[in-house]
Image (cartoon, rainbow, N blue to C red; front, side, top):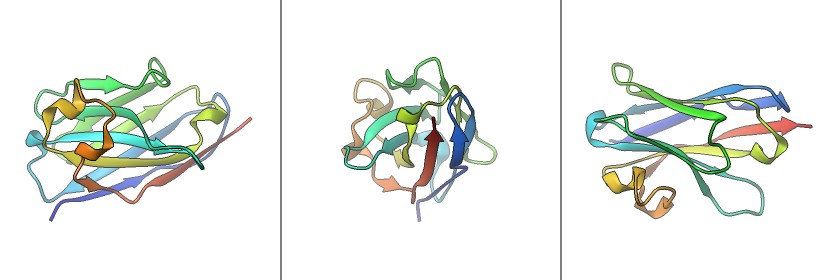
Length: 128
């Protein structure tokens, strides 16, 4: 059974940093894309970043480029999202999700319908 568990959220002041983790199990990590999405209250879910298991190809949303970094530990089947220089607009519930549709971390970046499995989400709150 494919499972994902996101963790690491919390309350941080503007300019601070957080590291989110997405622990995965139940599938061949190399064959999947892990994506990070976020959803703020009253807003649609948006793609933040993604990484391909096999070649570690990465993509970032425009709002986080240069501030967020996605990495993976294949041995632990865990994906991390390092978030630096956070601002109040980054406040949202962050979700990790998995898909074996490779273009989801490429031409189809940020399209949530391509992701088959979702973690439960972790809240990130950035105070001004």
